[in-house]
Length: 186
Image 1 (cartoon, rainbow, N blue to C red):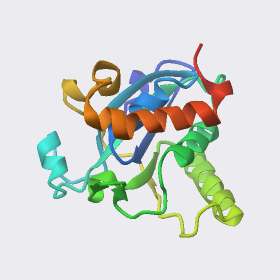
Image 2 (cartoon, helix red, strand yellow):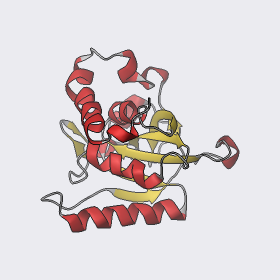
Image 3 (cartoon, helix red, strand yellow):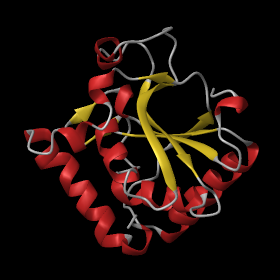
Image 4 (cartoon, helix red, strand yellow):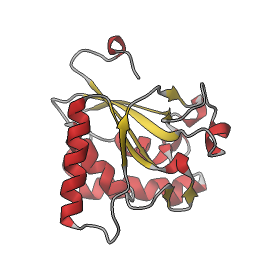
């Protein structure tokens, strides 16, 4: 968990897993009120996991993004609204062709309020029957955040023409922009 001293005054942290962290990072980098997004790993058993270890599916970690945001500009619930549009919360341990527990859908809450709000959003979306299958998003307490290797940070911004970025990341960024025009950074 991020020590309280590491969180700037008046800011909050959200930690989300929804498939490949490159996709989530690229989207949340464009959200008004988001000050930083770091790719990393959470929710597993291995101390100081590497990307290769996490990809094996044996560590229990999920690829996550740690989002530092200004709650006066964007709420945790608004971040979750974006989250549930840009990934499929009904596929267990999979997003598209990315399969394994490291690609699970999860909300790692940092406060009781975040836990409650995550439950409320999931209940509302379930009641709305937006999907044919049930939401399988895990809601769990935040644990140790392990920053991913440097080459994963700002991956889409640095590699927009890489095939995975063109065919997987870019469509998610476009979907976010289409649905949340008012939430875009200027």
